[in-house]
Length: 295
Image (cartoon, rainbow, N blue to C red; front, side, top):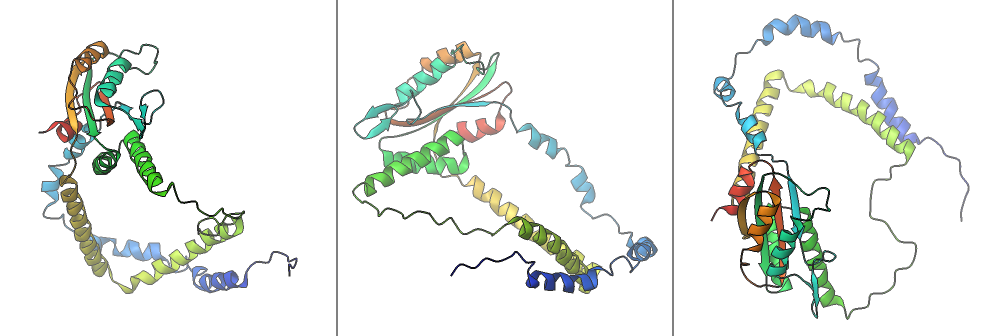
């Protein structure tokens, strides 16, 4: 039976606030700033033995920033409007048509975003004879290089493969309304209450953390640093183990020259499932060239 009720502040929340406030309200009377000032002279620690070595390598940040290139990515896939063709098996795009469209686009003077001037270009292409191979190769490549259009092509290809297996199955119609996924029940008063009480609880946690002295905290921090550095090292090692292959080419010149160079190249094969991109920049792209063009 439906019952009309008035909104009432939950007693469970009030209980949490009351307990937290019994300690929080006393914060400020402990003269923490004065006690810290008195101990400031005891906190003079020497530099880490590796500090000077690390300082000498601070220029690596600048070198790392230089790897971040500014540029554009031009992509063709079988599923783009007016790019891919149609066959009995669905949308297709062969290597010859893909390269031809990229070459034509470089001289599309009606496109206001067409790059001008001398350009560094890296062409990258993935091909497959079947849709299943296309999906598998796209998945391996996008794990390393998640170009948005390639990720979209991967999702579309996998959806088409799934549809082929399920096209004879007719699922039962869903009764409306639909259940939404499980998520936090974040109404306005709950969200504000959660933020306010969360701050109080965080203060309690901070006050209780002095059960570990300063040296103990520094020891924990050192252990955490070792763990994080090991995770970083494992991540870099995993990134180096790339199980993906692409067709690639590095070019340089203006748009017209690049178009002519592309048009004059024979395609690597004549597969009918292709995703191809031109990565264009006015400056060299050492990271992408070493990633994609190394034999």
